[in-house]
Length: 110
Length: 115
Image 1 (cartoon, rainbow over the protein chains, first blue to last red):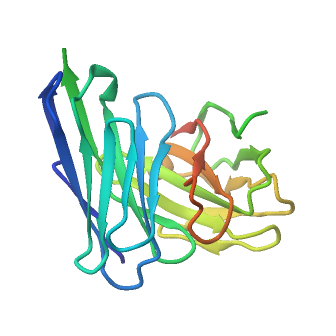
Image 2 (image 1 turned 180 degrees about the vertical axis):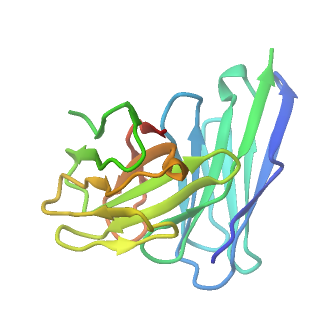
Image 3 (image 1 turned 120 degrees about the horizontal axis):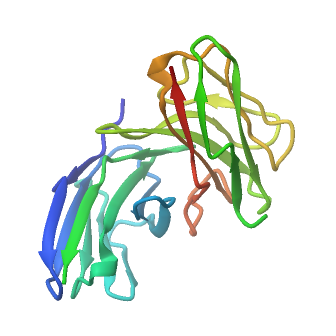
């Protein structure tokens, strides 16, 4: 069974802080790495899909990097805002479907 | 309809009863998936379908069956519900079997309680 690990499990920061999370995944049979944002009582929404080693993606204050050789990805949030509070999921894709990590839950206080 | 529609939104079901969770998408996505979400376990894949007419088993398929008669619909059936199937069920779709650059689109979920 493929294992996708995310750390930390949860995180509490103050408004304006920058933060980052880690996603570890198998380095073999890699096809793509996904990041999703999941707000309470809503559905997961795709942030990034990365396929190439060294990929960097950015959307506003959120960015992600990918290292397929060592099997990790970082998600960065610059200047956290209360509306960034959510669970951030990463998902590893080796073939047909995604294998999700358990997520990092971010809480941003104003 | 915009995106993925799941029905019902929630359901309380007696153990031993049969139940079908409905999932319909209007994006003409080839691939569709069923996940269950359980506290502490995250999203786990139940079944998937790469294209109409084909299905496959995911990580936790036991007790569930699916069909994909057409592109738009991907129902999940519990033949005889058990309490361990109490969960939130999410249907998702993607534009291709490979790495869809837009990621998966998820439905709003069905909260199922088996008593």
